[in-house]
Image (cartoon, rainbow, N blue to C red; front, top):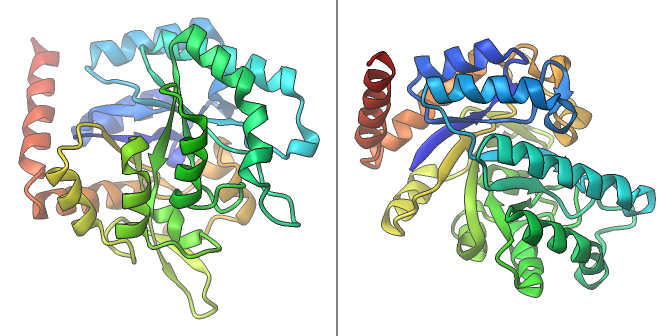
Length: 304
């Protein structure tokens, strides 16, 4: 397993991204927004310079954390979204990255759209992914039509295409209107499609609303999840997306469309705590030593 973090969880500054990854012996960085721009709005020339910096420091980009198709079907400009996907494929090429995150549209107030109604919107998406040899990783999210891993798996069962996969985000299950259990239910539903994992955790306040906390401090049974990943010989990434702030709670809008300076503000200390608690969890299940050794080896190679 390798460890990364979604960079705008605490900063919009690329130099700070590199410094944090090196300080905590992380393997990569997952890009969503930098310099107050979402990843698909950044200039190619700047991205190429950043790629050089990542290579120098031995850091990978495992996934582009885009907001592709995180919009309402009724407001959809399909041509614009497909152009966005083409641009994301270009950016993925720059970073030598296979995976691009996407969604199955925001759910209307009347309730989630049925899978049969969603599938036609992905026909042209499939053609682009095949042409560009990229993989769209769909994420279950409480604001979209596929709110949990079971519904996401049902959707992927219908698509039946290797250019589509899933992100397993057990923390999102605590926000699921259907209250899917992150483990074992969510895990068992989605693991055969899983190519990437987001790490977040939450508790419920007195009103029953989920509040994000550092991984391992909430209701997600990460010890069982990590032990199962170890048993299943998962070779992919764990990417921190804590959505956690000390002394502050992100707004619903920030949770739904995270990006920019206002979202990143105040996230540094929470990210430090989140990295620390994740490594404690990895150590508890016997995975920390291998990850730490790899980080130290990378640091040695950078000096040579």
